[in-house]
Length: 408
Ligand SMILES: [Zn+2]
Image (cartoon, rainbow, N blue to C red; front, side):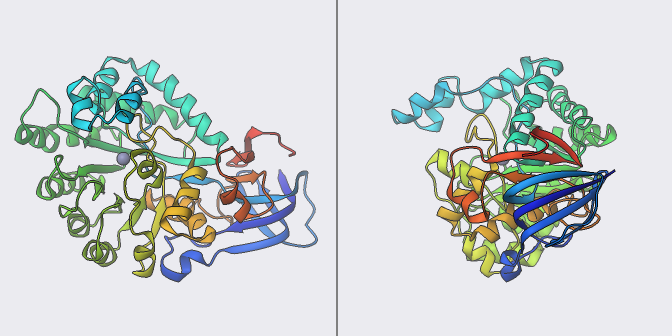
């Protein structure tokens, strides 16, 4: 069945099947008075002016159409919420004080251990539907709130079950998210390398392995050992680095051949050079900086140094309970000084590259999946500018309208 999206006011898309960087990150394709033709779940052709014949027509009413957004960094499977910490934070309590009062990440660990797999599945599915309604058609989900094998596996099994609803999900094993209360740091790193990684890989539960490499968490040496172990078991390396302080995470990313290095709000010139030399994608998380009232990071320095920049939400119950990628895109423009064109590449093609899905999605081009969003906006600038409300009018996933009206 050939479906034609017609009367597209502006069609904005990055191009290609690999991450774009430097000047190319801002060189997107913008068509006006455009159309796009799909057959089944794939894009056949697109252009401006007179459209071809089709079996079914979707009138986009002169609105903006972009590729479906790709959120390449989320912690979407978790028990409980942490809204009670907000008042304490606003009253000036430090993270350590909140932790001492029974809050912080270990409270999410307790809730996640306690929750059944079915309960976690239902909760995560609802969050994923909400993300879809905001334009996100593909995403990555990390474990990391178990810190024991059974719970980490439970979280990753939830992600595998969600693939029947959305096959374009990437699962990441983040056992190295924090240290559990019941084990020494040395014993926990041994446990991750000797027991958890082999077990997760044997069950085919994850494509990536991630480590929170930062002050007070995992050292660069520990991160390297864990990620190289993961690599031996077929899990591609990723890192959380330089969120609190530079402790060598970007160098470790370069040495292990990481696909991406994420957060990077404190990264300086040497770290940027390490990312460039290692061919590592920089995943920036401005919504986290917003919620934590922390620095945003040197986005422009990354672009100028030819490091591909992606933008993601980091959705999690502690440091940023926001699942709107458009909000993160606006923050990346305002505080990271990305242009609207650069941020579109960051939240689509480069996000897809950061989870190794850019061969099939992240742009609107013939042969790619028909993942697209019709936005209640005239053009790309208006999408970034009118932040704070959901502007996704219709979201199409693999050629099926999953949210909004088929004819908008
Ligand atoms: Zn994270």
